[in-house]
Length: 372
Image (tube, rainbow, N blue to C red; front, side):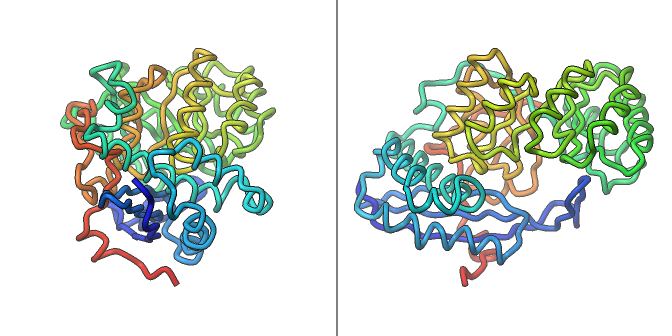
Protein backbone atom coordinates (compact mmCIF):
# COMPACT_ATOMS: atom_id res chain seq x y z
CA UNK A 1 0.00 0.00 0.00
CA UNK A 2 2.29 2.75 -1.25
CA UNK A 3 1.10 6.27 -0.47
CA UNK A 4 0.35 8.11 -3.71
CA UNK A 5 -1.57 11.19 -2.52
CA UNK A 6 -1.86 13.28 0.63
CA UNK A 7 -4.72 15.76 0.18
CA UNK A 8 -5.39 18.29 2.96
CA UNK A 9 -8.91 19.56 3.59
CA UNK A 10 -10.82 22.07 5.70
CA UNK A 11 -14.51 21.65 6.50
CA UNK A 12 -16.42 24.07 8.75
CA UNK A 13 -19.56 22.37 10.05
CA UNK A 14 -22.38 24.29 11.77
CA UNK A 15 -23.30 23.37 15.34
CA UNK A 16 -26.68 21.92 16.18
CA UNK A 17 -27.28 25.10 18.23
CA UNK A 18 -26.78 28.56 16.71
CA UNK A 19 -23.82 29.10 19.03
CA UNK A 20 -22.43 27.81 22.30
CA UNK A 21 -20.08 29.18 24.95
CA UNK A 22 -17.96 27.84 27.75
CA UNK A 23 -15.95 29.98 30.17
CA UNK A 24 -13.33 30.93 27.56
CA UNK A 25 -14.77 30.39 24.05
CA UNK A 26 -17.85 31.04 21.92
CA UNK A 27 -18.26 29.25 18.59
CA UNK A 28 -20.83 28.70 15.84
CA UNK A 29 -18.98 26.05 13.77
CA UNK A 30 -16.62 23.14 14.34
CA UNK A 31 -13.56 22.82 12.13
CA UNK A 32 -12.68 19.42 10.67
CA UNK A 33 -9.17 19.96 9.36
CA UNK A 34 -7.08 17.12 8.06
CA UNK A 35 -5.99 14.87 5.22
CA UNK A 36 -7.20 12.20 2.85
CA UNK A 37 -4.41 9.72 2.14
CA UNK A 38 -4.68 7.52 -0.96
CA UNK A 39 -2.64 4.39 -1.63
CA UNK A 40 -1.54 2.57 -4.76
CA UNK A 41 -4.23 -0.08 -4.33
CA UNK A 42 -6.97 2.56 -4.40
CA UNK A 43 -7.74 2.75 -0.69
CA UNK A 44 -8.29 6.05 1.08
CA UNK A 45 -7.95 6.92 4.74
CA UNK A 46 -9.26 10.02 6.48
CA UNK A 47 -7.86 11.74 9.53
CA UNK A 48 -8.35 15.17 11.03
CA UNK A 49 -8.07 17.41 14.03
CA UNK A 50 -10.86 19.50 15.53
CA UNK A 51 -10.70 23.31 15.63
CA UNK A 52 -12.88 26.31 16.36
CA UNK A 53 -13.26 26.91 12.62
CA UNK A 54 -10.90 29.87 12.31
CA UNK A 55 -9.94 29.75 8.64
CA UNK A 56 -6.55 31.47 8.86
CA UNK A 57 -5.26 29.16 11.61
CA UNK A 58 -6.84 26.11 9.98
CA UNK A 59 -4.84 26.89 6.85
CA UNK A 60 -1.64 26.76 8.91
CA UNK A 61 -2.48 23.15 9.75
CA UNK A 62 -3.22 22.16 6.16
CA UNK A 63 -0.07 23.96 4.98
CA UNK A 64 1.94 21.84 7.41
CA UNK A 65 0.29 18.70 6.04
CA UNK A 66 0.85 19.73 2.41
CA UNK A 67 4.31 21.28 2.59
CA UNK A 68 5.99 19.45 5.48
CA UNK A 69 4.45 16.01 5.91
CA UNK A 70 3.21 15.04 2.45
CA UNK A 71 6.71 15.05 0.86
CA UNK A 72 7.88 12.71 3.65
CA UNK A 73 5.01 10.30 3.01
CA UNK A 74 4.73 9.93 -0.77
CA UNK A 75 6.02 6.51 -1.83
CA UNK A 76 6.03 5.11 1.71
CA UNK A 77 4.14 1.98 2.76
CA UNK A 78 0.95 3.12 4.52
CA UNK A 79 0.95 0.01 6.70
CA UNK A 80 4.27 0.97 8.29
CA UNK A 81 2.59 3.43 10.62
CA UNK A 82 4.99 3.13 13.60
CA UNK A 83 8.02 4.09 11.57
CA UNK A 84 6.12 6.79 9.73
CA UNK A 85 4.92 8.28 13.03
CA UNK A 86 8.51 8.58 14.22
CA UNK A 87 9.63 9.89 10.85
CA UNK A 88 7.19 12.78 11.21
CA UNK A 89 7.07 13.27 14.99
CA UNK A 90 10.84 13.17 15.44
CA UNK A 91 11.83 14.98 12.25
CA UNK A 92 14.63 17.36 13.34
CA UNK A 93 13.51 20.30 11.22
CA UNK A 94 9.88 20.05 12.35
CA UNK A 95 10.83 19.52 16.00
CA UNK A 96 12.65 22.82 15.84
CA UNK A 97 9.45 24.73 15.03
CA UNK A 98 7.03 22.82 17.22
CA UNK A 99 6.51 19.71 19.32
CA UNK A 100 2.87 20.65 19.95
CA UNK A 101 0.32 22.96 18.41
CA UNK A 102 0.14 23.19 14.62
CA UNK A 103 2.67 20.47 13.77
CA UNK A 104 1.12 18.07 16.27
CA UNK A 105 -2.44 18.69 15.08
CA UNK A 106 -1.27 17.99 11.54
CA UNK A 107 0.47 14.83 12.76
CA UNK A 108 -2.76 13.70 14.41
CA UNK A 109 -4.59 13.97 11.11
CA UNK A 110 -1.94 11.95 9.26
CA UNK A 111 -1.70 9.24 11.90
CA UNK A 112 -5.47 8.72 12.13
CA UNK A 113 -5.69 8.48 8.34
CA UNK A 114 -2.98 5.79 8.31
CA UNK A 115 -4.78 3.74 10.96
CA UNK A 116 -8.01 4.18 9.00
CA UNK A 117 -6.32 2.73 5.91
CA UNK A 118 -4.87 -0.22 7.84
CA UNK A 119 -8.20 -1.18 9.39
CA UNK A 120 -9.98 -0.81 6.03
CA UNK A 121 -7.35 -2.99 4.36
CA UNK A 122 -8.03 -5.65 6.99
CA UNK A 123 -11.79 -5.18 6.41
CA UNK A 124 -12.29 -4.68 10.14
CA UNK A 125 -13.56 -1.92 12.41
CA UNK A 126 -10.64 -0.32 14.21
CA UNK A 127 -11.58 -1.81 17.58
CA UNK A 128 -11.47 -5.28 16.05
CA UNK A 129 -8.25 -4.60 14.14
CA UNK A 130 -6.57 -3.50 17.38
CA UNK A 131 -7.43 -6.78 19.07
CA UNK A 132 -11.13 -6.81 19.81
CA UNK A 133 -13.56 -5.24 22.23
CA UNK A 134 -13.02 -5.81 25.93
CA UNK A 135 -16.54 -4.72 26.88
CA UNK A 136 -20.03 -4.61 25.42
CA UNK A 137 -20.90 -1.31 27.08
CA UNK A 138 -19.38 2.19 26.80
CA UNK A 139 -21.52 4.78 28.58
CA UNK A 140 -21.97 8.28 27.19
CA UNK A 141 -21.96 11.46 29.23
CA UNK A 142 -23.89 14.33 27.68
CA UNK A 143 -21.95 17.60 27.50
CA UNK A 144 -24.21 19.24 24.93
CA UNK A 145 -26.93 20.16 27.43
CA UNK A 146 -24.61 22.05 29.76
CA UNK A 147 -23.11 25.06 27.97
CA UNK A 148 -22.48 28.22 29.93
CA UNK A 149 -24.41 30.21 27.34
CA UNK A 150 -27.64 28.37 28.23
CA UNK A 151 -29.91 30.17 30.66
CA UNK A 152 -31.09 28.29 33.72
CA UNK A 153 -34.46 27.35 32.21
CA UNK A 154 -32.82 25.88 29.10
CA UNK A 155 -30.17 24.15 31.20
CA UNK A 156 -32.81 22.45 33.34
CA UNK A 157 -34.95 21.53 30.35
CA UNK A 158 -31.99 20.03 28.53
CA UNK A 159 -30.85 18.05 31.56
CA UNK A 160 -34.34 16.69 32.14
CA UNK A 161 -34.76 15.75 28.48
CA UNK A 162 -31.39 13.96 28.39
CA UNK A 163 -32.20 11.92 31.49
CA UNK A 164 -35.93 11.31 31.18
CA UNK A 165 -36.38 11.01 27.40
CA UNK A 166 -32.97 10.03 26.01
CA UNK A 167 -31.78 7.71 28.79
CA UNK A 168 -28.54 9.41 29.82
CA UNK A 169 -27.39 8.78 33.38
CA UNK A 170 -24.32 11.05 33.07
CA UNK A 171 -24.19 14.80 32.39
CA UNK A 172 -21.49 17.44 32.23
CA UNK A 173 -22.18 21.08 33.08
CA UNK A 174 -19.92 23.99 32.21
CA UNK A 175 -18.85 26.35 35.01
CA UNK A 176 -16.78 29.52 35.04
CA UNK A 177 -18.87 32.59 35.83
CA UNK A 178 -17.07 35.58 37.28
CA UNK A 179 -19.09 34.89 40.42
CA UNK A 180 -18.78 31.15 41.17
CA UNK A 181 -21.91 31.35 43.33
CA UNK A 182 -23.87 31.58 40.08
CA UNK A 183 -22.44 28.18 39.11
CA UNK A 184 -23.27 26.72 42.52
CA UNK A 185 -26.87 27.85 42.10
CA UNK A 186 -27.10 26.37 38.58
CA UNK A 187 -25.60 23.05 39.67
CA UNK A 188 -27.88 22.89 42.71
CA UNK A 189 -30.90 23.39 40.47
CA UNK A 190 -29.75 20.67 38.05
CA UNK A 191 -29.09 18.26 40.91
CA UNK A 192 -32.56 18.89 42.30
CA UNK A 193 -34.13 18.46 38.87
CA UNK A 194 -32.47 15.18 37.84
CA UNK A 195 -32.07 13.60 41.27
CA UNK A 196 -29.25 11.84 43.08
CA UNK A 197 -28.99 8.91 40.69
CA UNK A 198 -27.51 10.95 37.82
CA UNK A 199 -23.75 11.53 37.79
CA UNK A 200 -22.87 15.17 37.16
CA UNK A 201 -19.39 16.28 36.10
CA UNK A 202 -18.35 19.92 35.66
CA UNK A 203 -15.88 21.66 33.33
CA UNK A 204 -14.18 25.02 33.95
CA UNK A 205 -12.15 25.18 30.71
CA UNK A 206 -9.15 26.54 32.59
CA UNK A 207 -10.60 29.89 33.64
CA UNK A 208 -10.35 30.12 37.43
CA UNK A 209 -7.30 30.50 39.67
CA UNK A 210 -6.45 28.19 42.55
CA UNK A 211 -8.07 30.19 45.39
CA UNK A 212 -11.32 30.50 43.42
CA UNK A 213 -11.32 26.78 42.70
CA UNK A 214 -10.71 25.94 46.36
CA UNK A 215 -13.62 28.12 47.50
CA UNK A 216 -15.85 26.74 44.77
CA UNK A 217 -15.06 23.12 45.61
CA UNK A 218 -15.83 23.75 49.28
CA UNK A 219 -19.23 25.18 48.32
CA UNK A 220 -19.92 22.28 45.94
CA UNK A 221 -19.05 19.58 48.47
CA UNK A 222 -22.65 18.40 48.92
CA UNK A 223 -23.54 18.32 45.22
CA UNK A 224 -21.82 14.97 44.54
CA UNK A 225 -19.71 16.24 41.62
CA UNK A 226 -18.25 13.33 39.66
CA UNK A 227 -15.20 15.28 38.48
CA UNK A 228 -13.98 18.86 38.01
CA UNK A 229 -12.51 19.15 34.52
CA UNK A 230 -9.84 21.71 33.63
CA UNK A 231 -10.34 23.81 36.75
CA UNK A 232 -7.10 25.76 36.21
CA UNK A 233 -4.83 26.93 33.41
CA UNK A 234 -4.05 23.91 31.24
CA UNK A 235 -0.28 23.70 31.88
CA UNK A 236 -0.35 24.35 35.65
CA UNK A 237 0.78 21.00 37.01
CA UNK A 238 1.45 22.15 40.57
CA UNK A 239 -1.81 24.10 40.78
CA UNK A 240 -3.83 21.04 39.78
CA UNK A 241 -1.86 18.90 42.22
CA UNK A 242 -2.58 21.38 45.04
CA UNK A 243 -6.28 21.41 44.18
CA UNK A 244 -6.37 17.61 44.04
CA UNK A 245 -4.91 17.48 47.55
CA UNK A 246 -7.35 20.11 48.80
CA UNK A 247 -10.69 18.74 47.58
CA UNK A 248 -12.52 15.42 47.48
CA UNK A 249 -13.78 16.21 43.95
CA UNK A 250 -11.64 14.26 41.44
CA UNK A 251 -9.72 16.26 38.83
CA UNK A 252 -10.07 15.51 35.11
CA UNK A 253 -8.01 16.98 32.27
CA UNK A 254 -6.25 16.27 29.00
CA UNK A 255 -7.92 17.94 26.04
CA UNK A 256 -5.26 20.68 26.01
CA UNK A 257 -2.32 18.31 26.45
CA UNK A 258 -0.49 17.44 23.24
CA UNK A 259 2.05 14.78 24.24
CA UNK A 260 2.46 11.69 26.37
CA UNK A 261 5.16 13.61 28.25
CA UNK A 262 2.66 16.27 29.30
CA UNK A 263 0.30 13.59 30.60
CA UNK A 264 3.14 11.94 32.48
CA UNK A 265 3.89 15.21 34.29
CA UNK A 266 0.31 15.52 35.57
CA UNK A 267 -0.01 11.84 36.46
CA UNK A 268 3.34 11.78 38.30
CA UNK A 269 2.35 14.84 40.33
CA UNK A 270 -0.96 13.30 41.42
CA UNK A 271 -2.71 16.16 39.63
CA UNK A 272 -5.32 14.14 37.70
CA UNK A 273 -7.76 11.32 38.45
CA UNK A 274 -9.61 11.06 35.13
CA UNK A 275 -7.31 11.08 32.10
CA UNK A 276 -8.82 12.69 28.98
CA UNK A 277 -6.67 12.17 25.88
CA UNK A 278 -7.91 13.22 22.44
CA UNK A 279 -6.49 11.65 19.27
CA UNK A 280 -6.96 14.96 17.44
CA UNK A 281 -4.75 16.89 19.91
CA UNK A 282 -2.19 14.17 20.55
CA UNK A 283 -0.15 12.77 17.68
CA UNK A 284 -3.09 10.65 16.58
CA UNK A 285 -4.03 7.12 17.60
CA UNK A 286 -0.39 6.09 18.03
CA UNK A 287 0.24 8.59 20.82
CA UNK A 288 -3.26 8.15 22.25
CA UNK A 289 -2.43 4.49 22.91
CA UNK A 290 0.76 5.55 24.70
CA UNK A 291 -1.26 7.86 26.98
CA UNK A 292 -3.98 5.28 27.60
CA UNK A 293 -1.37 2.66 28.49
CA UNK A 294 0.31 5.15 30.85
CA UNK A 295 -3.00 5.78 32.59
CA UNK A 296 -3.66 2.05 32.83
CA UNK A 297 -0.25 1.50 34.42
CA UNK A 298 -1.23 4.03 37.12
CA UNK A 299 -4.69 2.47 37.55
CA UNK A 300 -6.39 5.63 36.30
CA UNK A 301 -9.52 5.63 34.10
CA UNK A 302 -9.36 7.01 30.57
CA UNK A 303 -12.31 9.19 29.55
CA UNK A 304 -11.49 10.64 26.11
CA UNK A 305 -12.24 14.21 25.18
CA UNK A 306 -14.34 13.95 22.04
CA UNK A 307 -15.20 17.32 20.60
CA UNK A 308 -15.11 16.13 17.00
CA UNK A 309 -17.57 13.23 17.41
CA UNK A 310 -16.50 10.81 14.73
CA UNK A 311 -16.38 7.13 15.67
CA UNK A 312 -12.63 7.03 16.35
CA UNK A 313 -12.92 7.50 20.12
CA UNK A 314 -15.77 4.98 20.25
CA UNK A 315 -13.48 2.38 18.65
CA UNK A 316 -10.70 3.15 21.12
CA UNK A 317 -13.02 3.15 24.13
CA UNK A 318 -14.42 -0.27 23.30
CA UNK A 319 -10.93 -1.66 22.84
CA UNK A 320 -8.70 -0.15 25.55
CA UNK A 321 -9.08 -1.63 29.05
CA UNK A 322 -8.65 1.72 30.84
CA UNK A 323 -11.67 3.25 29.11
CA UNK A 324 -14.92 3.52 31.00
CA UNK A 325 -17.12 6.27 29.54
CA UNK A 326 -17.00 8.70 26.61
CA UNK A 327 -18.12 12.26 25.97
CA UNK A 328 -21.20 12.95 23.84
CA UNK A 329 -21.37 16.19 21.81
CA UNK A 330 -23.37 15.29 18.69
CA UNK A 331 -22.73 18.44 16.62
CA UNK A 332 -21.17 16.85 13.56
CA UNK A 333 -21.91 13.14 13.87
CA UNK A 334 -24.16 13.03 10.81
CA UNK A 335 -21.38 14.22 8.49
CA UNK A 336 -19.68 10.80 8.56
CA UNK A 337 -20.40 7.62 6.61
CA UNK A 338 -21.06 5.81 9.89
CA UNK A 339 -22.50 8.25 12.46
CA UNK A 340 -22.11 7.60 16.15
CA UNK A 341 -25.18 5.98 17.66
CA UNK A 342 -26.10 6.38 21.34
CA UNK A 343 -29.12 4.54 22.71
CA UNK A 344 -30.27 4.87 26.31
CA UNK A 345 -26.99 6.53 27.17
CA UNK A 346 -24.80 3.75 25.71
CA UNK A 347 -22.67 3.89 22.54
CA UNK A 348 -23.41 1.28 19.91
CA UNK A 349 -20.26 -0.45 18.76
CA UNK A 350 -19.16 0.66 15.26
CA UNK A 351 -19.50 -1.90 12.47
CA UNK A 352 -17.88 -0.36 9.37
CA UNK A 353 -14.25 -1.15 8.48
CA UNK A 354 -11.82 1.61 9.39
CA UNK A 355 -11.61 4.25 12.10
CA UNK A 356 -15.01 5.82 11.43
CA UNK A 357 -13.46 9.07 10.14
CA UNK A 358 -14.69 9.04 6.53
CA UNK A 359 -16.43 12.36 5.90
CA UNK A 360 -19.43 12.38 3.56
CA UNK A 361 -18.75 13.80 0.10
CA UNK A 362 -21.89 15.90 0.43
CA UNK A 363 -20.42 17.56 3.53
CA UNK A 364 -17.17 18.28 1.68
CA UNK A 365 -19.17 19.79 -1.16
CA UNK A 366 -21.35 21.95 1.05
CA UNK A 367 -19.02 23.02 3.84
CA UNK A 368 -15.49 22.63 2.44
CA UNK A 369 -13.18 25.65 2.47
CA UNK A 370 -10.40 26.69 0.13
CA UNK A 371 -6.94 25.92 1.45
CA UNK A 372 -5.51 29.30 0.38
